[in-house]
Image (cartoon, rainbow, N blue to C red; front, side):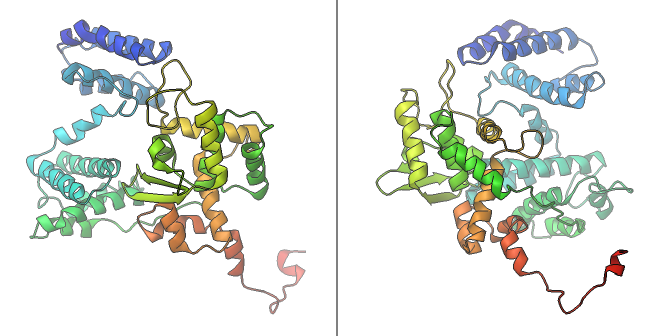
Length: 408
């Protein structure tokens, strides 16, 4: 494989990383990865970045491979298209190969889906994940020798989910493929998409009960968020309060802009990152005060419109992962699940929903506040609404049971 272009130009990539505030350790990972690639990709058996990545699978663990996958993807994109990585779109370039190697008809189906989804103004992230699910499904069919929708038999569809002894792909994958094909149905009047949908297996949507916050845990977190005597930065306090009292997703908090807040009307208005759907929420005093304190006392003086910014040398907006880490740090400060147990911002969102359910707020209202597309989305949270679940319990007073039943 020809590596001369990368060998000659990669110093530009390193300079870009330095100029944009990437850490020294991260930059060294790039240097090591690129030098390793330049050394090993001269092997005549390696003709692409993908083949090089495949050659690494015998040398590294799954977690190490995942990290190398991202690094290789970034300098591949730089080498082939001259594109520098950004913090918003820093990986995943190799995934495009799932689309590039498909048959003409499968590519056409994906293009039809993209255009249809775009016309309906679905979010880019949602569309991308459905495209990827469709591409992987088609890649599997193509590997089995089927290059058109009409060729795909039921046995090949079923084997994508079950290898003969166990289920290898579950309900969520099946649902993604179903949604993907339904979007294309009207473009195939002969029923090719409907036929494949009918072949999809009946899989249960099995979800474990979410490890919701207990009442004492909730009180400890509230104390950390609302007690000025407990040391938290203005930024972290504002992020925690916003997550706890609005239930916003981490991606939406990270993307929140100054003009998303209407201080006169006490409201927050955003376009949700996940769904692309507009969402308006009331700006409660506790939330507004926390954000105001951060903007006035701690936020860097910059033209950046995003509210929450980094605190290192290079001022830039936070990523969703940083919001997650902030909520974990708040839970640690509160002494909640320090040793073990699930942590993170989704617990804040989950607690917000359950508190509304416990206070008698109707499901359609909660669905609207959460910004969900479907009313069914609320069902996930109902399993933790212990107040309402207790009302469903049946009395056994009329059926006295003796101790002997329990072996006593």
